[in-house]
Length: 305
Image (cartoon, rainbow, N blue to C red; front, side):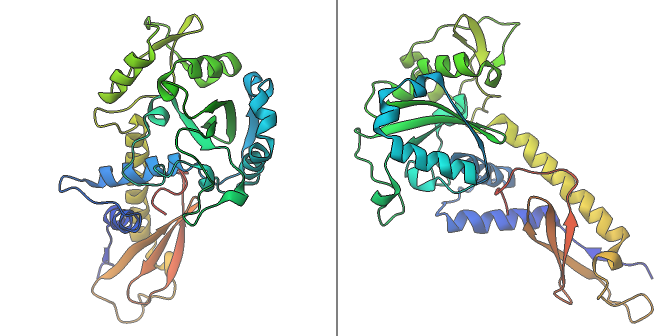
């Protein structure tokens, strides 16, 4: 009698995404797909800056700024948290933690902003103090395991988040963070033009410091980072491969299940109950035993775990 194992790890992962989004207060749309839910979790994970240890680099502009000295205590708190893999959530925008929020500065230019106030000012919501339009902001980029601290700017600076000057600072200090567009010629857009392009989820090359660059890979027409599609389908393929492996080696994954020498269950049901950076957590529904299926390809942290 053949061994029958019922599994749908892709569906299980989507069910987990539904639960996580509900916990974040996300209001689903009738048209939402599994990819939409994955994208919502992915982009939120990027916005809140995954709490892992980062190497921290400072731009020349920050080191020469008087604001660097004025806000040194809050600045050092943030740097310490980044280096030690601690959460910087208290310094984020209150909008950044919402599952459905689209941060166009981050989506199109890869730039985060944190509020420069000390942790002692934490409010009941868990955020440091910020006075609307009067806070100082720390702008930074995260690339793999490095945090690039760009500049300290006033929240009330006109056209702050649409000003190409931010890209000029990044490009002067770390030109390798931008994709050099050698086969096309970009324009030197004004802040208003940048704002208009972003409002339509347009991807655009821009002329910065005498060269044409693309700050990020880009977004789709709905404002989803193009890279999300790659991560989603990579996870999809990885889960299907694990299913195939469980079917081949069921009793190696679950040695406490009924062995072939004893009575057979008609169908063995296995569920995906957790996703970690290094492994998937699987559960045999008859015995409730758990096992780890180690991952071949690492995924982005904190997306559907």
